[in-house]
Length: 213
Image (cartoon, rainbow, N blue to C red; front, side, top):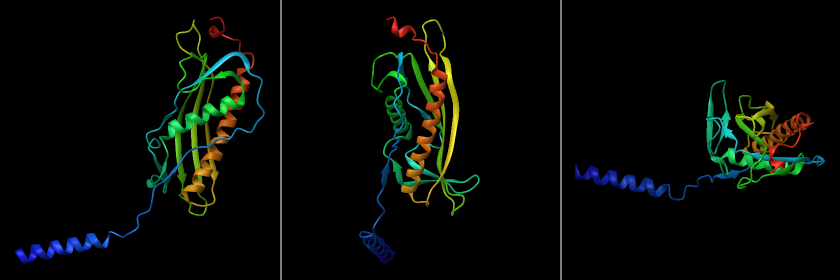
């Protein structure tokens, strides 16, 4: 019995030593980048925009990249992750996009204590790499956006714009870097479409309570 224990311990120790030099893949971290390249608009006087942190559907709210590999099959990638929660990263880019677009007179930062009279809310519905077809992978992003107007005389915000924007961008391969580039292109397209809707629906908007304070 003692001999069996000694042999087992030696084998376990030897197995552990054999794995000491085994290389393990390192984790890579990514973040969103949406570059606004359009012409800056003339701000609508008296408009102050705040952007709430976007929520993310349970299937996409983690740090790990998600791949759809079958009709009902998904898998996560431990070694390729977002640098921070995707909702936080996407919110920051939405804030930067609208600050550069110039539609609103002021766009508040995430830590601002000022009170906006317009608010953007949103939910990331889908965010995954579609790898069901190995020769035609795609980056999928779907976001539901709301632009709300806040007033003193309304118990609930007034919906100015609301829509769901869904984009599937072909990517060159199933490589995580290619997927991140695809997500960024999809994100820019979604933001461009949302901005167009905002510009259209903001026409004729009059300054509200924030201008009289």
